[in-house]
Structure formats: C-alpha cells, structure tokens
Image (cartoon, rainbow, N blue to C red; front, side, top):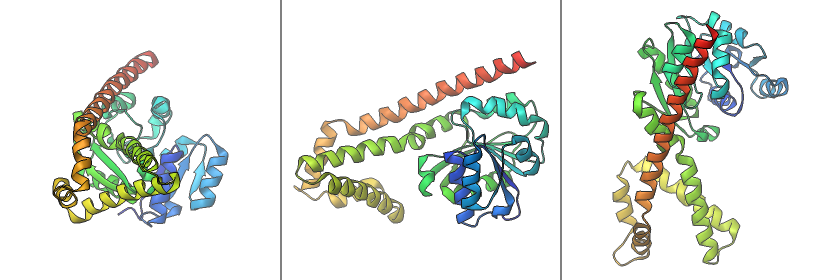
Length: 285
C-alpha cells in the first residue's frame, strides 16, 4: 500500500535511517518515492549512496513533495521544525511524529490546524528490524492513515495500535525503555557465567543467545511464559533452584516497579512538553 506513496523524512538520524533502510530493503516503498532532509550534508550523502533516495537540507521541500511526512527529529527541536513547515502542511498529508515524549496535543497546539496526525513510538530494536512499536491516532486520522503508519513501521519490526492517553506512557515504560532492562539482565547473566568459570566472550554470547532463544520460543509457541517456565523447571532440578533465588531477590517486583517508574516519568515529561509548546506558541503570537 506504500508503493506509490511519496514519503518524506524530516530528520535522517539514527531512527530516520533505520526506517529508510527498513522501507527500502523490504521493498515496502520505492527509493525514488522517498525524500529526506537533515542539517548534515555528509549524513545525507551517505544515506543517498546507501539507499538511492532523494536528499535535501530543505525541510519545507520535504513537506511540500510528500504525501506522508515523518518528523524524525529530537523532541527539543520538533517545535521549531513544525513552525518552519506549518504553512505547507494540510489535510492532504499524513503527518507522523516519532519525537519521543511529545503528545499529539502538543503537536496540534503547535500547528493550529485540523491535520491527520499520528504519533508513533518505536524502540531501539528498529535498527535490527525487531522494534516493538506503538501507534496512536489523532482526531482527524482515518483507519487508512493508521494502516499506512503500520505498514511503514512493520518494515522495522511489529506494531500495536493503542489509545494515546496513559497507554502511550505505559508502552514507553515497557517497550520503549524495556531494551535497557534486558541489556542489564544479559550483562548480569554474563557476569554470572564469568563467576562460574566461563570466559567473558563465551558467557556474553551464551547469555545473549539464551535471551534471544527464549523470546523466539515465546513468540513462536504462543504459550504463556508460565507454561514454558514450568517445562524448564523440573522437580528438584537446577532451574527451580535458580527461580527460587530470583523470587527471593524480588526480580518480578523490581521489573514491575521499573516499568511503572518509567511510565510515570514519561507522563511527566509529556505534560512538560505540552506546557512548553503552549507557552512557546503564546510567545510567538
């Protein structure tokens, strides 16, 4: 459904390039239909050479030429970029923001228009085409708009559609921040392997592969994690002894608390962002 769509990226940093790579390499979109902008000409030259897409340093040109405009900027500069391009944004264009922590209400307040807005939250795993991505729709976005957004972000992983409100904060606490929790768990498992005599290289490989394999088994089998845990933990065996230690250490409670803390922080940052956008718009009027 993206083959004939003109797609523009305003911001071509890490996440922008990950999306361009996903779209081109999966053949979900044609390189000649993609245009991207950035302040770094060296970065744009590199992206053009890799993916054969059009590039420019002119954000307004990207917005003008695109049917789908993806704002892949840092949240701190999104307000200024929205103001720069506002005159050429209208109902004919689907506007997608991946600026972390910026709610749809903040974007709408910055544009003062009835526009087809979508907010998307991918995670770092987009770089290996395994992102868990949440998509939330604005008031004027259609079901087709949501389907287009899902098609774009399915090229770098898997997507879920959620209501923005508190659910986007919950997603941020779980899947947006979650890779960091897993990296710590993998590092800790690797340390444990070293403590028990394995080499650092082997231990890190084994802990990483174990997490990867466990995740794939969960996804492919569609069994509840508790059922799979019971299949590993035989009576009086090694796994149940380890699980007992994890429970004594409060692993479940710690992870639940981590997700809750990250979600609350996400909400606080989002509220601050809305306030800043409103104040800046007052100052600019």
